[in-house]
Length: 492
Image (tube, rainbow, N blue to C red; front, top):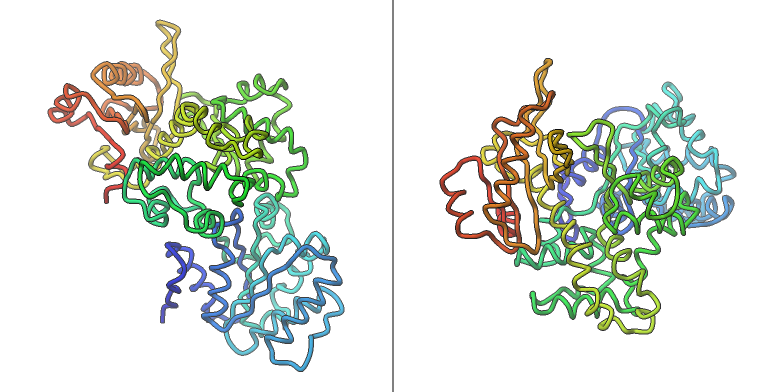
């Protein structure tokens, strides 16, 4: 019988199904699962509700010494078992065995939330769990415990099962809890105006907590209310969202040099997407950036997208819209914002928001639409990868920036990989025939490149402002021209 998802959990159908399957696994022997994701994504709610729905065990760790954590765990275990007092746990080996013993009679989820806090105080805890889950060990074989370790420090959680880590090969579930996608975020905020949905997503992204706890369910009433909403909910020092972007960096223990990481993120927010561009912006050598870029990637704040048309070249983008908004709008005017001059700051920053925040957000939404939601017949096939790219023209020694290159699946043999679409994406400009002709020239350039087949590539033009009548007539008469407005991005 399937475990019904509680009504209080929005979306997350796939995550709930995976957790329910893992928790109800009837096989003999204790098993391990790892759940990770940035803070405020709803991991704790998912796991707490799972434990409650199944009669499972839930323990939320806090920053504490090893002795205090063992004492707290013993108290929660005693309360869960209905014991007259706390369970005495002399060491972590005994604690893990006590947790596994909870599953002696039936499959049961045993949740340890914020697991990295425990490891800070007990560095050998992963090795202790590895030993506890040794095949053939009686404490494991007679248990049906479904041990779930959860954490928000992505760099730590990502390494828990990697390489030569003690728990590598022990887990039967590795579940990342990602932010809501742009469509789910619009539904969560109760926004049915596509243009407004893009603008709100450009500020708060798809993090669920930013609506509930952080702005007390204050959503823009409409397009006319958006500016006032930004001032009262985001640029207001009295709202928790005001300092959230700073806390995202401060919370990850691997982000020790805050000034350097803020500078790297500021460089990307300013449009410097390559390693060389970032290095030039912050005044460092490109070779010096390997470590900070890797750390920010591991922390889930930066993503590196390989350029599909230039081998060995990549573009970096900030994964959390609120961080982009903070770096582009808030950080340069922080003193004025602390003095509650948010309305003045926003009035001066509105154009900058459109170019540095909203434009890149709209481009990424279009890429996600092509990858996840577009009808394969519209784009000539199933999109396997979608990213921005730079196309060089050897004859004129110029380059063309393509906002979208949608690739199909790689061929099985030595054939060329299909380019399903190339695109121009603009938030605040009406697109017309000249934009179509530029894309057509780019497609002609791709036709002669080895390794890709762009002969049937669609020419995709996306704009939130609209298209000229001439371009609309052309699209109506040509199968290879695809026009995408904001409404189409949110249509089923």
